Image (cartoon, rainbow, N blue to C red; front, side, top):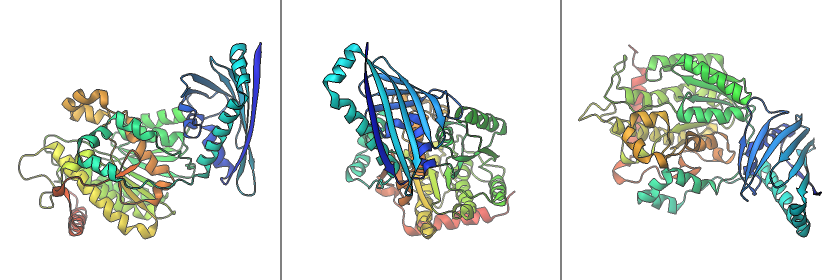
Length: 468
């Protein structure tokens, strides 16, 4: 014998029906709007539809298995729910209104006798659970979040070093995510260009953005690998709008050729993610006569971003995201040695100096392009377990492995900066875990306005030189 409980709740939101359906139907994101959920995971590959499955881990300590049994885009979503505690059928109906969308959530739960008796003894419990879930759904879809503000405690933790380093770990990520707001922005009309997209943070970013429906252009240097990655992303997410561009970004000629192709195609770029990078040892000079760390990590993103500016300003709300590193905190800019020719060369130092320079460009671009509505921000991923870290810093990787973040955790702030409505309201900041952090913690790394202008002048002169 079983006990049956039915819930029926309705909300109205000021979002187009296609956007509301796109967000809610990706049920792995339920944790963003249902406070009872700890984690949602998509279990099946391909486009969402009948047969799609999800595992929903509840904060109460048990899991639910969802299977889509009816799928009517922008109209109806019907799912069967199985668990040890109960079975259920959940139906979500979508109706366009004059001001947005009406969403009706109907759920029928069937409990075994023992659990049913408990449910009957507390008749208001399930009702509160349902109301809480749809209230969270409404908050997510209303999307009226405020941009995070700089925090004195965060700045102090960074300056004291150890609290800041704790924040770089997976433990810091888990602590931070408890305070995050949902991100329901619609990406179906969004074009994102990602450099360094075939592994590590770039690939983790591409996987999420592809799953959310964005059109992607992936820039890589290995064409065979890039094609394999694009094919795998389409298979996994059902998103066929994934393009590849091949370029060796340490060579200015190839950066210019890439920009030429993109400008000729004329496709507006909503988000540019400058992610490509490597820690290079020993000191290497490219065929164009430039030190490779400097060329790849600073000169290349400068040239690419400047040249793609016409595509970034076509549509309101363009964004540029520069992926940096916490190692930047240890270095200031050396305007008289941008190519690391003086003294003993260190790949780590060259890397950190280049990232410092990219932070300086972030500040200047944010000011210059404010009138165009382009938000320019920088971020660092914390300590993430990527192939680049393992190969270039083996001792560090070995010692810190248990504390390293997954690539997906490291990439989260890139994705947030690329998608969250509130992230477009802030420009020129340095972010970790969706929170602005100081760009400097040591006095000797501080630069002046004149230093930033001198850097841009030096970079402009180099990219204008004839390429060998």
